[in-house]
Each structure stands twice: as C-alpha cells, then as structure tokens.
Amino acid sequence: MIIYTDRYLVHDLPTHPENAQRLKAIMAFLEKDGFLDKVRVVEPLAAGEEEILKVHTRGHLARVREVSAAGGMLDPDTYTTPQSYEVALLAVGGVLRGIREGGNSFALVRPPGHHAEGDRAMGFCLFNNVAIGAMYALEEMGIKRVFILDYDVHHGNGTQRAFYSDPRVLYASLHQAPLYPGTGRMEEVGAGEGEGFNINVPLPPGTGDKSYLRALEEVVIPMAAQFKPELILCSAGYDGHHRDPLGGLLLTAEAYRRISELLLTLRAPVVMALEGGYSLEALPLAVEAAMGPLFGIEVPRGKEGAVEESPGATRVVEERIETLRRILAPYWGKG
Ligand SMILES: [Zn+2]
Image (tube, rainbow, N blue to C red; front, side, top):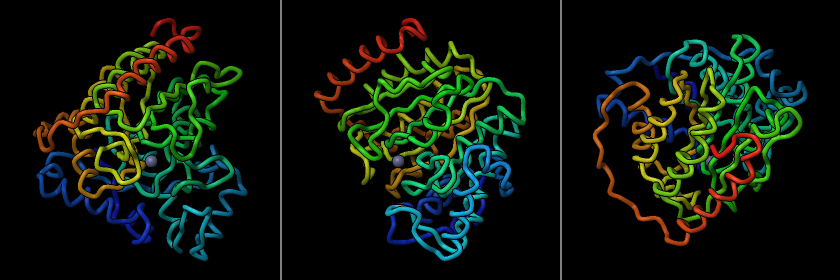
C-alpha cells in the first residue's frame, strides 16, 4: 500500500531542493511505469495534536503553527508556507496510516522528518514523522519492539535523540560523514536503559553499493534480527544515490531494492517513509526499486549501470565495520 495525497504538494518553495517536484516526479514515474496499477494507493488522515505531542513539546507544536501561518522560516534551511502546518500533520498521518494497516507500506510524504527534534524544526523537517510513528506503535498498539532503519544520507539526529535512552526502539543509521547535521558517530550507542540500542554507521564519500550493503549485512541486519522487531520503520531518504546533488555516496537503485529484501528477512511489517532525495531523475527510480520487494512487484533491473565505489572508501568501511563490531559486541555479541 502506498500512502499519498496531492496535499503534500502545497508545502512548496520551488527554489529549495526539498520542493513539490520531488513527489510529482515519483508519482509520474510510478504511473507511467504501470506500477500504480499494481498497488493500492490510499490517502492519509491528518495526525492530531496528541500524536504530535508523543515526541514534540507543546512549544514546538505552537511554533510550527505560528511560523507556518506567516509563511516564515523555522531555521535557516527550513521554510514554511501558510499550508505547511496542515501538510506536516498529514505527513505524520501518512506514516500512522501505514503503521495502523499492519502490512508493508510506503508513505510518500513531505515534509520529511528525521532531523526534527522534540523542541525544534531542523533541516527541512517540521515534525518527526517516523519517531512519532514509533511512539504511536509502542503506546497505542501494544507493539513492544520497533526497529528503525534510517538510510537517508544524512544522520537522523532527531530520531536518535527521541529514543536514545529507550530500549524499545533499535535505531540504526547509515549516513555520510562528515556531512550535515554532524551527529551520528559510532560511539553514540545510546544511554541508560537504551545503551546498545543505537547504531551509527558513518560512511566516507565515495562509498558505493558494495561496502554499504556489506555494513548492513554484516552489522546492522544481524543485530536487528537479534532484537526481534515487531514493526520496522524505515526513514527512506534517497540522497545517498550517486546522482544526488546533496550527498557524496555512490549508491544505485539496486542497493535500495536489496535493502528492502534484507528488511523483509526480519519478518515484521515494513513501513517506509520518504525522507530526502533531491535528484529528480534518480529519486523515482530508487523509490520504485525499494517498493518492488515490499509489494512483491517485479521491477526490471538494469535501468542504470553499475557504479564503482572509490577504493579508499572500501578500505575505510572495512575498518569501520571492525570498529563498530568491537563497540557493539557488549550488547549484541559478534552480530
Ligand atoms: Zn537527507
């Protein structure tokens, strides 16, 4: 099931990389490819205040509403329009709809969420769609363990922060470093009861499918399997694609297809939520590739050629995998 509404397009600033053309390009591509004939597309319901308050403060909620009413900036990167508050509630609601339905789904939402912290908007994000979804599943649905995989090229500082001391959520992020927002070091493993339940895999620019998938297959997925999640949420950002103008990783659409397959091996419903991804050519290909396994739809491969990663990156990632295993061994054994 895909969750989508045209209302997601009215939060827009054409000169900004996070603009409405992103979703338009995805939907046009899925339509033209016949993909939309094979999967149900449903509309989201707007989230309520009580749902936003599971992760955010009242002050943050009020600020987003007020700044949006004036169409102002929430931070130097994060614009609003007079419709943005309503659209942001629909973005959260899109993820909630996917979670409530119980099967695999992809919430094609805007604005994105993983940088938004409890008390502030950041990095194009107003409310933390995925973090709110996880809290909702834990508190309202009786789900005990949620695995969040964040494969956006940027570290999901907001999501990490929301669950840093919470052992009910295993948060794992693969991200380029150095890059905005600067958090996401390997040593950030969680705190208190949540110690060991936060996995960061910082990757050098030039990392391609080979090393990226290796880190997932050798570290993240085995640990997630031990965690035995009842629900999997994915912060699905596609700015790690080699054609993305904001990121320096060299992933192809094939990597995203493979990640979906790996998530399915964990045998829990997978709810993906769109985060970043700013190449209008690459984004639709990558989204379709990720959706294929989720919905059991064959997506023809080879729409783009192989991309070689930089040899330097291969070596660095090998070392990182070893370091990360050592850091996480007290909690997960050898993975
Ligand atoms: Zn991003």
